[in-house]
Image (cartoon, rainbow, N blue to C red):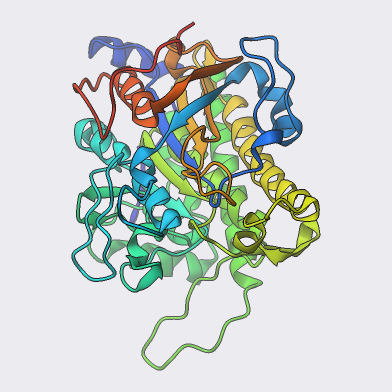
Length: 438
């Protein structure tokens, strides 16, 4: 850590740290796990390759991932049974999101007696979260809700929260990039966070100014490669600070009520919002501030429109396409936009070196939705991608097709193994998912 007044700035993985990790019995860079969620399913005919194995052609929706074809697995045939009605009637969007990381049937209620199950990210956070400053990080572009009726008698807590600390406690996601930044890069001692922010605002300082002396002392003791990595890391933090400041300054908001601090501002531009949060996720992984993250591009059932890519209709409305070719084309634009943002994340991770590999190589990143086709509301043959090599334990670059009704939770059980978290089962799992290592 680099320390200053009210600030503790974590460092990226440096070669100089290898002897320390070796002394602790492990010289490998740490492995990370993340989940990126998109709502309302996807247009599956343009998502699923025709061929299996390594010799497949990327379908239209996956074309933005072409530079990372050898870094991803396409996993066809996985099922989220607990998102199905199973006697509970309508409410597929709420169930899809609530079950996506839990593998448990959410209780149908719009009251306070919500119940789903612990999510896989929070199980991992319980086991290895004490190794980092933050046990886990939950971010998204739509605010989480904890009450109200949002989907056919299901509480809004189900369709707005991906992560669950316990079966009745969802973990709210943070949507404001500035608040995420301050959570990552402050020491959060009582009073010091406000003091640090006030000092930066008063003198127009960067958070880097507050740790400059500590950084200079450390750099003098590092080799040339580590010095370059530190410079790149600190530069990326400063650039992110400036982007957050510009985004906040460009936000037009109603004047705050008396005795209420003004909001910090969230980018109006949806893509910029996603990318700011993406950059923060990457920094958190690079600095080993956390090894577990969930990122929700939009809550399930979202009816957000996308006029900046020529789609003025709401996403949820379009997902009920009824076979309309015109609606299919607009859905494909939305799906491809989301995958382009995912490609941005992979590009950022792959550009960062960690030892003899890249940060992406040390990750396991799931991209997907709890719904297959939005019109049918089916929960089998889901759109699921797995990016990264899991520290060398996964062989990407292939399309794998699994037997019908293979539980999605089998994938998560296999991912937990790769974090040295070994449990007999998770959610509705029936075993480990074979074939990930080739």
